[in-house]
Structure formats: structure tokens, C-alpha cells
Length: 90
Image (cartoon, rainbow, N blue to C red; front, side, top):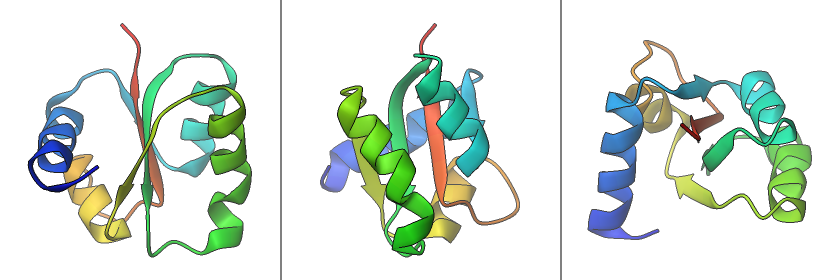
């Protein structure tokens, strides 16, 4: 996603009540079919994201890449960095 679209998606993530933050919680949401869109941090270790990225591709869950774990954590409304987050279907 680029520019304004990414900013809009991150704004939506920050204000959303139905979201999960963190690799394990995001993986569970995707496995259960609850994830509408997944956000992954570009600076996270590739081996950390590999299984989640593969699962998203297999289940056709859109992935949006965010520049950093810090930026993703901030957008998710938490005080720490995060490698992954997801908006949940309502």
C-alpha cells in the first residue's frame, strides 16, 4: 500500500476496537478466518514472519507492509513495537 492509503489503513488500525496485535494473536486470527487485513513490519526478522505470511497468502488475506515494528506498534495503539497486527472482521 502506498502513501495516503497506508496512512488511512494505519489510522483505521489505531481506532479499531476489533483488532489483534502480536505475531501469535495475528496467526490465530488468520487461522480462524477472523482477519480482514494483516499488517506486517518490514524490519521484522524474515524467519519470524515467514509462516504468517505464507498462511495469509494461502488463505487470501491481504497483507499491508509497514516500514517498522515501532510504527506498527504505535499504529496499533501499544507502547511497544510489534511485528504483526490485524484488523478483524466484524
